Every structure is written in structure tokens, then in C-alpha cells.
Length: 258
Image (cartoon, rainbow, N blue to C red; front, top):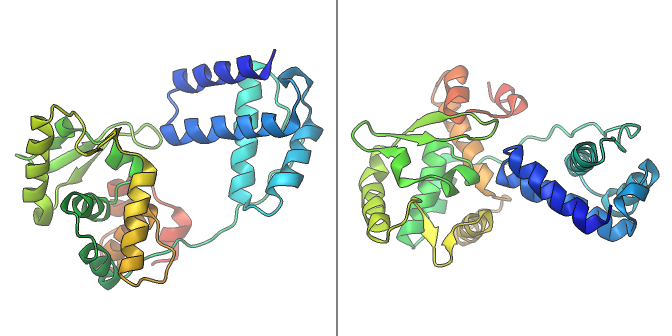
């Protein structure tokens, strides 16, 4: 089997397995980069080739990056060639690093530095509801219930649905955004000039805002989610309730905050 055929089969496997966009993109790209480096047909590739790739390309990378790569290769070869060429490779221990968290004052400065109304609304919603980037991007107009003041996250990470409360301070702006999108015939709550937003769109907004606000920390979209959890803990919210709100959060992270 040639690598082009293998990659096409991988796309199909990833789609029918209902993997998230994040998993689809990372698994596919990992396998493609591996093939480009090894320059062998899939049937000829061995465990030693996988080790060589890691040694030459990922030796300076984090444990998480190596684990992700091995997971991608295992999934691809197990699904298509029915063999696991990573079985004999020991996985590195995952680093236990605490994520970056913003103070409430830093969050305020971050939001105040965003002049575009739609951009500010998106970032406010991510922070106030602890949303992942993918959840915001895939949020549809029909997922919001303004009568009940709630929103629905459909098939989030782990294929779980959950509900979030629509904050009062952005209730009116969200209503206007829904009306605007309905007038444009859009089904998603937020879109861009080229259609559906991408994680890169959101990360650029957050990075530029952090820089403008003078925040020296390394700020990512997920930083808002961790900050949301931390601030709830600081306000005395029960940890089990926070876990329910987020659908998932790093146990290590929560344990160190209480």
C-alpha cells in the first residue's frame, strides 16, 4: 500500500470514529510528517523507523508531544494495517506542569484591551463559561435558550453534552449577535469573513490582547478556561460543581488550587 492510499484510509477512519477536529488534525498531520521523513511505504515501516523519527525530530519536545505522536502512529497502523508498530516503545512520563492562570485584574485588562465588539464578546464568553476553543467555534444559534438563560455544548471532549449559564453581563450582546447572524443566514453563533472560525483566529485575538494589556505571562485561549476554574475556587465554589461546569478539567490543576 502506498502512503497516499494509507493517508486517505486514515482520513476515513478518523471521520467514522467521530474524532474531534483537534484529534483529526493532529493525528493526520503527525502521520503525514512521519511518512515525509521516513520515505518508505507503510508496509515497510518498522518500530526502528518510529524510534528514529522521535530521536531526530522530537528529542527536544515535551513528553506530551511524543505521546501524541505515538498515539497517532498506533491508531493509524492498528486501524489500517492491523498492527501496532509502537508496541515495543516505552512512553515517556507526562510532565506535571501547572497551567498559566490570570488574576481577575489581568482578565479585566485583557478584555478591556479588545476594541472589536465581536472579538470581545467571544473572549468574554470563553472566560465567563469556561469554554474550550472548539466549543465556542462550534456553538450554534440554536444551542442558546435565552428564555432559560442557558446554552448547550453538544458532543464536547469525550463526546459529552453539557449546559452553561448565559452570563447577565453579555446577555444583551449575545442577543444582538444572534440577530445579526440570523440576518446573514448563518447557523453558527460566530463566523468570520471566510466562514467558520478557526482556533488560530481566536488565539490571535487572545495573544494580541494580552500583549496590548501588558500581560507578561504566556496566554492562550485555554488560559481563560483555567482562570475561570481558579476564580470559582477562590470564590468558594465546590470543586465537584466546577468539574460539572467544565465537563473536564485537569485533576492535578484543581488539586493544587485547594
